[in-house]
Image (cartoon, rainbow, N blue to C red; front, side, top):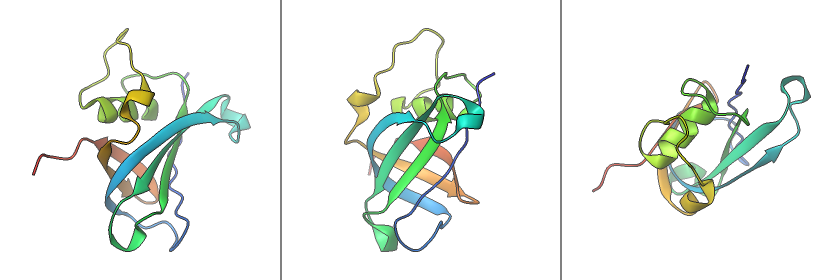
Length: 116
């Protein structure tokens, strides 16, 4: 079973909820969740407002499914739902801007912002 855990960490001002415009800065292995096995840490830098420069991060399972946090992030970064067997390279998305939604201190959505 794949398990994903969502967490937001802000370097200042605690863990506010909200909708943030943020630049995807990458994903890395995360060893801090020993009870859940191997994990990934997805990271974004907030671009504006009172939390500009702060980091939002999400800890998720290594294995993606259509229903877990990893699948949600990949679908959000790609701008379309996760498809079984479809290749995905997170490095191609580093530096791009996304909308990141945080509720109750957890990342609950990632999406490509609408064109303005």
